[in-house]
Image (cartoon, rainbow, N blue to C red; front, side, top):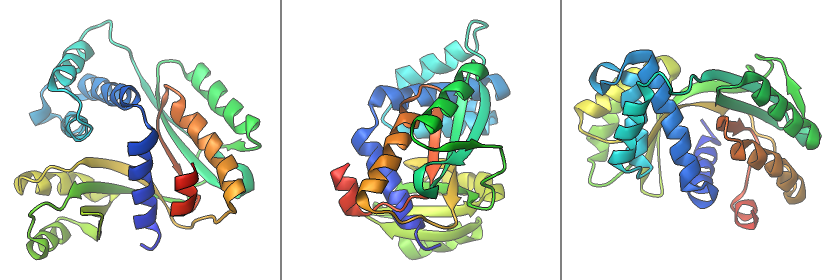
Length: 246
């Protein structure tokens, strides 16, 4: 899975550097709202809510905020969000996959299309990028005092396709269908992931010169700043030097 470690590390570092805490919390609250409406307020019987709560903890979201979000999600006045994805190409042929939770589809698609157009990109039909991205489970957790050999055997048994170690973190990749079993295994081992989610992992990366990459990242940042956007995935290869300049 060459290139994935660099890609996931960039995503983690970039999130830590430039994402505002309020924006992260807003995305988690939306996910909690959808999870509660789908499966009820009890995390024991609601895997999606359990995952949202775990990610809230990983983002250092206060427990009071989490409980308030769960309670509010059960109210009739709580927003009804629709999950929708958009696919397209940024400048220089960089593929971009945008995941949204929105209460206004017309607003969201208009915004997404305008961002692509403003930056010389193009919104494509759904499925157009299926040959570029694989959807996989990605778990990021601190190594701490975990026995690495024993840990590897356990997670491979639970469906891990690959486990990478970098910057004192484990990154576990699973097939999409093994996401739930890996969550369950980590819970059984009493290990809390810092982040666990289904991600769009690019099969191939696009290398650009620094100035070209900066133009593409302006579009990526515009997507990430939109309140309706939950996640943005792309196949632009970013070097450490590019990240520092950005």
